[in-house]
Length: 246
Image (cartoon, rainbow, N blue to C red; front, top):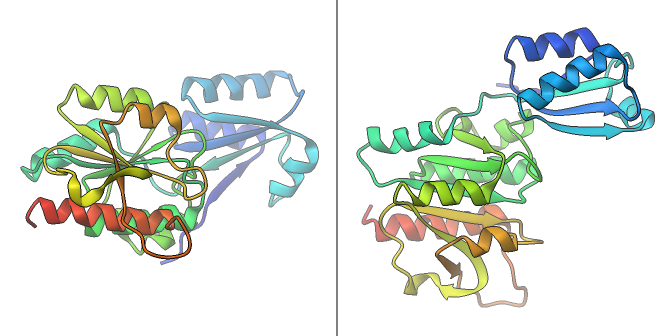
């Protein structure tokens, strides 16, 4: 099956997309444009907490497939996002302790797709990504997930730190991948858990890391010092699965 990222171009089509409750990942608007229709679109975008990028005409022209964008292009998600509560409900229905995966700074769609695929196979109940500094559920992500996107819910949140704090009140504790952390075999990774993975370049951001309970290091023996994010996810997720006795 082929999946395509949906670009919606032009003022009326974009406005209708918002009004029909289509999930919009990003909105690109011509910088400096302040006329009525654009302002109406911006109000709708802010009401739905959509990430807005104000860009020059050259950027819009490059993004446009039709070259008739009228100063605005919306990028719609290829799939509908879940809520964090729906992910927790997924765990309840399976009568399992929540196993959540939170991704910080994962902007490569192939990485995200591969991570969702691994998450599904490792029994993760859902994936949580931030609205900013993260790729959304594009067609490329769907293809890279090899179909797992149909079975593993993905939630998009405004702030990972706040989400972690809220989930701690639900009894979930958090471990983040960090090469300077405690070796993963020395940690107790059982119970309700959220695994936090950052990009291989930047890792988990400082603020998110500070809100985690532990940091886990993957033992390495080689000449380079980091793993691809999707590989690191697999190693840590399967250690959690092993400790759960599954």
